[in-house]
Amino acid sequence: MMRDHYVFSNGRLKRKDNTIYFENEEGQRKPLPIEKIQTLHLFGEIDVNTKLLTYLSQYGITLQFYNYYGFFTGAFNPRDAKESGHVIVKQSEHYSDKYKRLYIAYQFLNGAVHHMLRNLRNYKEGTGEYIEGIQLLFSQLHTSTTIPELMGREGQIRHLYYQSFNHIIKQDFVFEKREKNPPRDPINALISFGNTLMYRVVLTEIYKTSLNPTISYLHEPSTKRFSLSLDIAEIFKPLIVDPIIFSLINRRQISKKHFDYLEGEICYLNEEGKKKFITAWEEKLNQSVKHRMLKRNTTYRYFIRLECYKLIKHVIGDDVYKPLKAWW
Image (cartoon, rainbow, N blue to C red; front, top):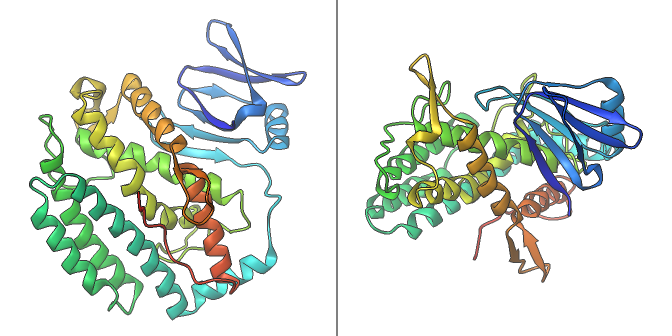
């Protein structure tokens, strides 16, 4: 089974014959099973060369680079063999047409809010007023006539949703408000780290289809970012990232000792904390559910790919896009 591989130590990645090795700073080498890896996540200071990149490209392996604090810094993506001019043209048409774009953007948030409410219903004690508030705001979402208006109402929904976290989390963590740049407390650090992993997985799945990751609908396309991954991730962040955070904290697998601070302000997961989160992350992505339409077990990771396929069918006119809404 293909899987992601994570490297936290400093060193270098090297190719020798038909094998790749990770060599740490002490010169110890460990072979990596290239035929079983789909993405390499590099959290340490890692040296690579063009010989290695050419070899990884042949296998379709992506390199994702992160800095010491776990923030994404860049990626190497193999040349896309699944490009389709027809799909790109149709994607662009749905962006250029105000109403077509608004429909897709609304559906992304439709799926997102469904999963937010699903989380709150799993923690009934203390979340009732937040469920009612979110349902009221969501009932007004479809009346939005512009993307900024849609995003504004989504911001109100998410503000209420984040307020509920203090009623869900059992340890002595306090979550006052969402702070991204930079995260200033453990809950924000967990959300940021989890969302970063989510964006990268979504992008990896997009690259396995003929979608162009720079043409998006909810988030405005711009230079130097793959905004479609931000769009699709809206559906999956409350389905995957947030339950992992609740579980890790409430089961005391992650505590305050797993966080460090930079200059007393920027909060981030230390190495042990990252490893604990990634272990739970991989378990979640590989968890499977019997798909109602496919009639077979489908992993959470593959649900992301299916979302891409549904979007393709929508833009080329084969089917009407409806977001994933977990039924299990």
